[in-house]
Image (tube, rainbow, N blue to C red; front, side, top):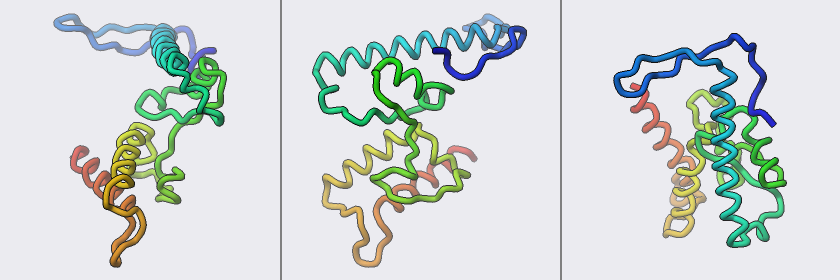
Length: 158
């Protein structure tokens, strides 16, 4: 199943050249085909590892896709095709771990590319001495983590 939509055959994109080679124009369909082939290959390799250790026996409700690759159009369908289970893209501000968050999306924190990092921070926080709920008048840890991540993302954008 192809990722994303079908493009007009004549539509092209500029691909940067490697090393001293100049950039060149390539058909958008060709670029999409290459990306899809690599994404499918990576997913099949990862799923083979899940099957090898029988971790699929513990997955009953599907999977959540995180990282920049989750932003590829149709990636949820491709993951579902490879795994045979439902797949959805992570939305970290509407995550069960975080509860309801800011839904504006203006700061880019709905981007699934942040999901793995925030999940790791929250896992560490849950396993450490830092409670996730309010303590001594402070706001919840997840809000403090989101605030720091927003500040970091803002500093990168400057």
